[in-house]
Image (cartoon, rainbow, N blue to C red):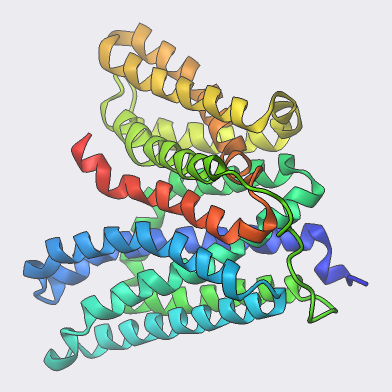
Length: 351
């Protein structure tokens, strides 16, 4: 029997809360990483650090996912594996907060190392969280889980500017200390809702044949999603004519996220991958129009393409990436999706 705290809806909400907290922590980390290096005289290490960080962001999710699928098919063991990564992440948060408060010269050299280990541990526990959400969504239907995951992502990206102002007001130490508390609380709720009565329950999907093309598809969906969020939306907020893009793009993202909660069941009648492809092409068209068509006409056409594009892409990306990958390899599939998304952090500097 599953108690009320372990209902499918509670499991979905706990996974989405964890997803939101990880994204918020990533925003805090992305903002403070260069600030910390400047404040503590580590500027000379910044470029090398960023190269190592970007490699880890692409390599760790699929590697940790493959490791989890091979050695942690027992769901209770997977939750223990996840909890260990959470504890390590929280300890690193608190250690960095303490270092920032003390600021002693000998310990400062450990900052880059601790921050890189934080990147690894954060991805290690984030991966199983999303993969368990995918397993629940596969049983109950992708429509709601995929749409609301996209909504949470879009809202966090839309609020980046406000989050940065808030983090700046808190300062280094309090931001990282608060991050530790949020990660522990969200992970505790997630693990509580995903506990099962039968500790020997295994993921029963090994008999499903999986073609390699589905894993390539998960990676490709991640790349396209990352391109839209890190490149297209960023450039539109900087260069759109006649409007303050830093205000209008976040507002549009929030409105699209709200619209997804109403439209998700209708969108998924057309097929996850078809909706995702259509949404990506519309976002790409909006970007092209903003570059080649100037004036009010270009702005109007851009938004006409962008709004349905964001709704289609965000509402189907999670499901399109993982729909055809069986539970037996869901951690690997999730890792490839995250690797593709994260890869755009590095490649947008060259496109």
